[in-house]
Length: 468
Image (cartoon, rainbow, N blue to C red):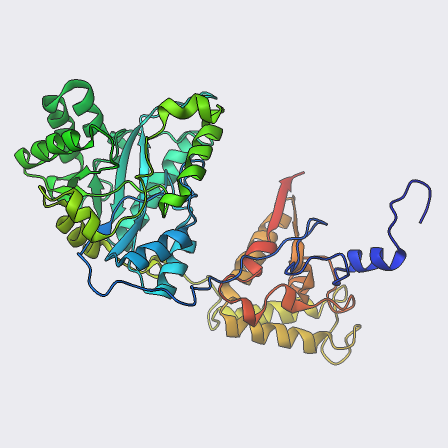
């Protein structure tokens, strides 16, 4: 093409700039605003054949990390759901560190294979401002919280958000006091792994110290919302620790409950888990060896295997009972958003149609219907509005229009971007400056009836604003 230019033909350059599929565009790429082709995550496809046991011992895993526990969990949420179903578990809880990052993928997979879902998180309480690089065992006390119902999920999400905002990236700031009275009867709280306050106090200072820490948790959450977690990864001291924890729990009138503190779906994932731990600590595998568990014990187990390991305590049966009581569908937590405030006599759709009609009729847009400056403009607007109504997105467009209007009135630069430029309605509403009809752009790249599960409108039509 020219001196020092890449060896790209004019036809290939035209295809790239126009967004049309060309020979160099990878299979599956469906858009993006840069040459680094992107694609949406495809819908979950369950295994063609998923064998389940004919008879099982009732058990629900209440403590499980996916790879959304960064550099800690070693299995995708989908892997965990499939393995839990294969083992015949009553339910599975996803409890990643300090957030609900993997719950959507987890819920989608579990719904397809008929696995009841529990949602929670392992909170970091009284953690350091930031974990030093190369630290093999990051500081902080852990507390496992499960949502009993959608209200508990909402309040737990609020607590996590506040902790993340109060701290910094990778280091949320949270104290036990912050959780007091937040959702007393809508959470089930487990004492957690070896870094939980109760197990850590037991190992460091004995049963009396563990009892005091358990009392602190009971004051905050209520005894009926507490369970003392037991787990067995085959380490030499696991049985002795579980015996002591169970005794502390029973003396305090609190149920012991069995978990496996899962960090990967199957034992085959253990090498990946050790590699992730080494990366997190910025050490070699040889240097990390003394810090790592001796065996591949932190995987999902069946109820029968857990029953053998915890035969002396009623923890497996209690885990199944608590698990069944905490299951709910993630779709129940979708917020019931209030309608956009519309003038009297209008609902969201009729008001959107009015605004689009008024905007389109402006001389600097398309002009009045019947004498439009761009042929087919009003026909395209009718098509887009019908699709917006069918998919239930009029409120979304009104909110974006209102934000843009506010910015313009307050001298804040604001411009719709991405695939929103494919919408004639956005052009009529003055959200974008690109004439989608004159340019022949495809509205379905912005909002399509085939993408109702995760419409592109929510990810690519962001209105960006900056103070002049």
